[in-house]
Length: 534
Image (cartoon, rainbow, N blue to C red):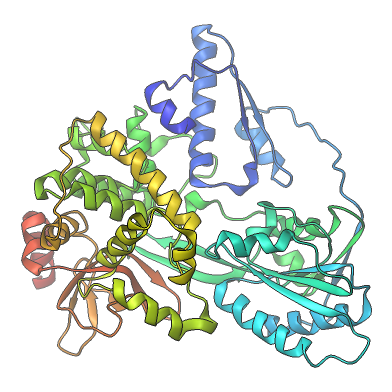
């Protein structure tokens, strides 16, 4: 919100103090904001205006880096109220951290008083659901005299009502065991936690500008993350943290987590900086500078979208680019909305973009896979995931967001409400830009044409051998198992993003006609064809 305000007023004249909290998380927005407030502070000093005081706060951060970046700013240390925590390491490296976590949980369970709860850090939903089932199965066959165990999963796409169970006290003679992703590292404090079991692993995204690939991989945490996890054991009383790796392995960990700005697609950052009228985005004062390749790839994407042009060796926003910057979205989504009046489907595109801009609205518990597939069948569109999501949203609106309906259909009601809020905001921006807002009603062809025209760089074609290759870089890709098109073989698709786990997957697909792609960017495809021939 502050960044968007800075687009209208780079000096942030309304404020005399800005507090940047949780600075160690180093999200894209906070990193850009560091540069923006630093520039505002310097400019206000030069103009003799009211000085801008900047306070950067964090429980764990590289204070020297921050102090140096803000021109030798003083560092103040405040003593926290954390209770003492004992940290234990394994003697040997563990070949299977999941098995090690399971053994540790039941060792604690059999030896510690039942009033002391356990928090285990794992990497993702599948791991957590599998271990939840294993723990519950083992807990049924524990020896007499052993307390009962209440196993609670916790991850971002879990419905809010189920996430909330972590705050409820366990019944008498029963221990709460919470299996969580890194959502429990900083976002929330769970009462009753005495033991933390840290696997030392986290699932994180990394963007490869040369291929446009976003890789989601399990990797080691940083030391800062490890200390954050440890701190969860000492919030209410003294605690114990079991690290399922050796002390030697801990010493080899990176001091801090790699900032998001160095591992993501920078097209939205570059668009924002140009909207902020930064004279040269290539020399912007980032605290941790992204690679020149990532910056260049982002600029090329914006040029292809028609958002940016080069004038007198300077990068400037085109009229389309200025409108795109008005939306708090990824550039490809902004462009989709701005193209929608041409195809008379703005109402539908607003819904689809809103659905793609929040965490998944679908809740897919692995233990109930058959039931999920059965109830979802009525929403499925043979034209792809975008239109399936559109039909789910329409059904949600028809029942006025009924929570019981959401539960029956495995829909995350909280995320659906967020979609409605996002959509209302985006619609307001369209009105301010004097855009005509029409509905295509039941004509899905126009919606798919619009998506083809804005996602033309994210397209893939079916090959004679039944595989898919991206039109852009001829990368071998596959349809993600979560897609409604997983068992289909459409000739041509556009996708929202690529994700590399054990293979390279396309996420959120829409069936399109190859001719629509060529109509969207004839010069781009002519150049690609020429390059392929050469």
